[in-house]
Length: 173
Image 1 (cartoon, rainbow, N blue to C red):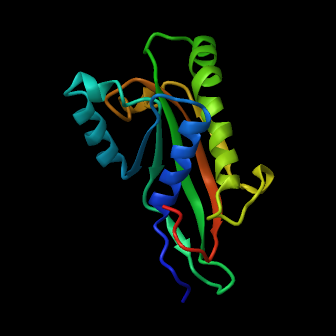
Image 2 (spheres, one colour; image 1 turned 90 degrees about the vertical axis):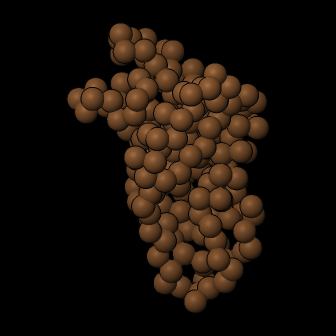
């Protein structure tokens, strides 16, 4: 149908790199894939102090996702993308501490810059922050009722229902 082929995980990776640069972060880990793979990857990070220090904050693009290719006007539309902005925490923190120490200080600035960089990307048709359709859910101590989703204790913002229309241009990666 349309060409060239886009690799969405790479394009989101390019956006994450722009977020890291814009916020002058020393660490912003980017991962994509299935939950079990993320859990295994982060467990492997714990095996060395060097990698353990590079785990968080983390942006994770959850798979699977679908790109609908139904028009020659654009490459395709990715709907219902799920992105998690994750930062480590401590089990005994209260909600007010999580909001101050994690969400306001780390997660929300990354979220705002991620949306801004998606809008700035030449890959996506949505060119303003207002055009980026999505839902945002804050998850305090995510996994509390599920015996920890990952091996780590963390808080996250879950971006769901994210819709991005991919232009008919060559990969930016």
